[in-house]
Every structure is written in C-alpha cells, then in structure tokens.
Length: 203
Image (cartoon, rainbow, N blue to C red; front, side):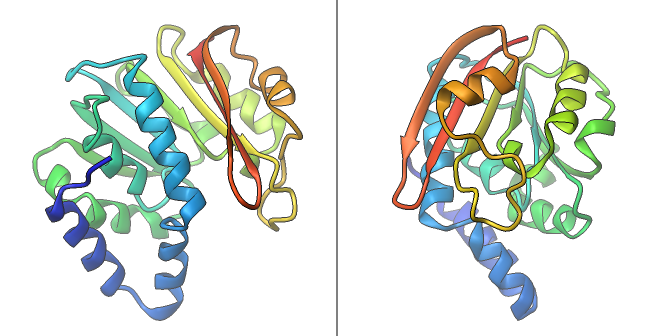
C-alpha cells in the first residue's frame, strides 16, 4: 500500500521531537512484523467494509500508525478514535496523524479499553492488542462493543515477548478465545519470528 508523503513527514516529525528513550519505543511500531500485520489488516478489511462514512475505534492504538495506514487504505474512514491506556501515546498519536486531527477526522484518548464509553456507535472496532490483555479483560472489552459493529481482532504466538501475557498457539485457539460468533474472515500471517492471527466478524 502507498502512504501519503505528508503523513510520512508527520511520522518523522513525531519521532524526531521525542527523546531517545521514546524514539526507540516509537520505532518499534515500524518493525517489519508490525507493518506487515497492519497492511494485512487494511487490505483484508477493505474487502469487508468500504464506505467513507466509517467511524472506527482502534483499541491499543499505540502511536497511531495503524490509524494513518487506514486513512491511506481503501477501507474508507470518516473518523478514527485511537484508544490506549498509556498516557504517553495520546499526544504522539495526534502528532503522527496531524493532518487528520486538524481536519477533525482523528482523535486520541487515554483510557483502559475495558472502561471505554462509546459516544456514538462505531462502524468498525479494532483490537490488535489481544496478546497484551488477560482473557478476562478481553471478555469485558468485547461485552461493551456495540452488536452491529464490525470487529477486527489480532493476536499472535510470540509468547517469549515479556509484554505478551495472553498469546495463543494457533488460529483455532484464537477463534475459540475471540468469541466472535458471526465470523467473516479468519487467517494467519506467517512472520519470521512468530505467526499473527486475525479474525473479522460480528458478535
């Protein structure tokens, strides 16, 4: 997929404006596996739901890279809200999506995904951080997702990563844990160090 040069410039500005410690963490969102997983999501989701009226909420939105990529994809987005529990992410995500924030198409929120209150029903809800939360937290998050929203979830089998507390061993296990009954798509992305799993559907 292609990314607008202005968006790349905002990415670089966002990284350059942080201290060395934060820069390292921000660059993690551009690792090969991270980008491949995001491209996979954007391209697959575009085959499911394509309309410029899409309101999207991304949980575990991190530094906003996925949001930028969705804006550049064929998914179509009227507005994206990026939710992350880490307060350091909010301002960075806004800066990384500066063009969209200035146009009222992007905002970032600091919140525990389990406590997030929807101000309006989204068309699409995305959670690519399932390996970072317990099953109990995931269930609490899923319970609050509006019933008619498309749901996109990702996880992996990269259990050796110190921040991964709820990995799965296979796509079959992830399908069981995800509790998405109306499944439209499920698949595996094989990466050099681990496999990434994705499910798209409705509750």
